Length: 136
Image (cartoon, rainbow, N blue to C red; front, side):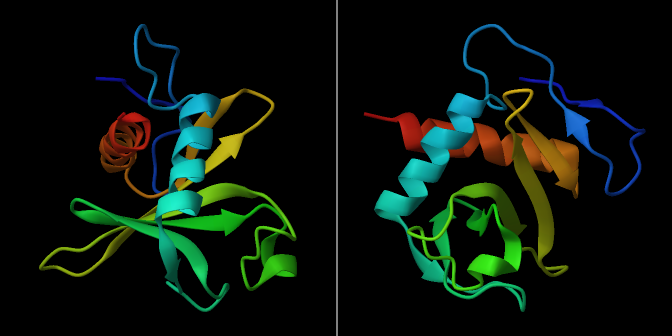
């Protein structure tokens, strides 16, 4: 399993970057793009908060993924014709209530970074999404 390392400490909201791994890389730019294409092609639309409307969404086993526009609220209705998507919110529902993790594609590094939430949970979700998105 791919381990994540912290860029600025490992407190809540820390940005983390996974090291390169052999074999399948759940945090690569290619993984993010495959997941994004899968959600846009096979998902639906749902709003998860007050910042955006009609986010591209897919319900995975045990969690939901919502794409976030790369221009922020300039694309408040999440229209793929207006901008690309370089972020994703992952919502895990549990008896304690929902937990949210946010990941973003760092294009300069070609990596997915966790910008908010639990690194290990985000890593598990990325692995699951990659497996579903790349299954033939």
